[in-house]
Image (cartoon, rainbow, N blue to C red):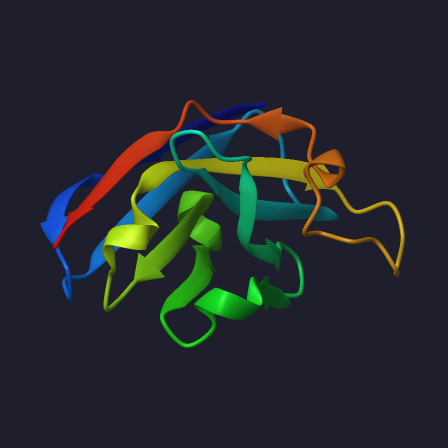
Length: 126
């Protein structure tokens, strides 16, 4: 499995960005795709996830309403639309994929994911 994240950049507060994560190497039915981020000096944190086959999404509480995760089945690509960006959103954003193992699986934890992309830098200036 390979994940290629892209779309990061330098933007101003209030701007929008769309990150992409192109996945390859297998079919992803039965898998969950997620976005995490890591700011300098901080732990990597959950941003959003989507169960590939049914499109069920989940978000970090603090990001609901500003960030949207969605997928394009034909392109095997997951996107993260980020609106009203704030300087606190500055981080390296990582996409990840993991097999759905349980109906009660917690997709907000890193342990739910088996493969990780290389990360893309998002910098939001004030």
